[in-house]
Image 1 (cartoon, rainbow, N blue to C red):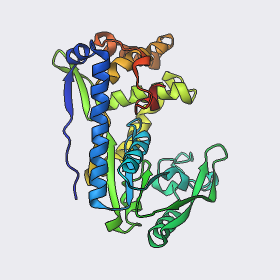
Image 2 (image 1 turned 90 degrees about the vertical axis):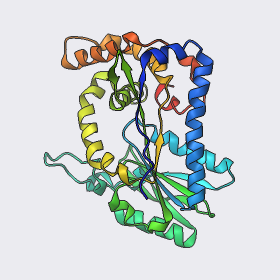
Image 3 (image 1 turned 180 degrees about the vertical axis):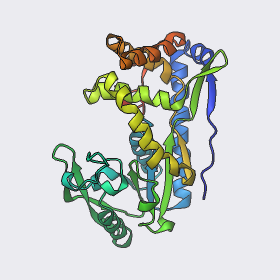
Image 4 (image 1 turned 135 degrees about the vertical axis):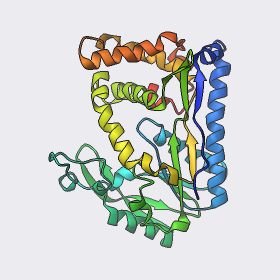
Length: 307
């Protein structure tokens, strides 16, 4: 069935700044809204009773943390649930598909061992348990039979960029699969002009996360972002209309937290193309208030990017 369409919201920055004057209430409201959306998704999953939940979303959409939030919600509602990453089905490094320039094509669905994926999930559905592989990103190799999963009339949430790809979905019994697309549905305007579309907001999320956890400078993220977006258009967003459910991962107060986090990047502004692009990103925040990182709740989905 087609997804229930969630139209994007265009929110004026003045409203964000005004709401931000009551910090705790604003944070509490936004977190409650997100948790309510996760709860609604869990209710829908239980009602449909399809045991394999395929969940995807573009880069920095919060899909990984959302998968675990959904697991926790299902468990709190009395159902068994586990999360497994599609990354565990990556081929060993020497077997990756190649692009025309000879570089490894990590974002191609054929970088996954499709036969192994089908075997593991069909065994899980028929026998109620199966052993799954685990991929080691340091060695770039897969360990077979590393993770044992039991279905126990519960749900397995499969998270990854190719989770809605028909090449994968066709390997599974259609009546056992429920599909979710996680993405931001809130954009921002100032003086009647849209100044922060969802893709730009996700780039800032990615920039902060890569700087904190992957050792990438903001300039590196800016340089690679066009190729990331190209991969999204080819392998992720094209399948969004086929999702059973769209799950909104927006937080209105995030802009105020993000403004504080981006202050670390002023040192990278210079005369280079990337430095000037970074300066443009900063100018957008001239009209956005601040909220200290300490206001971020300990268990917020946004901790994936800011903590």
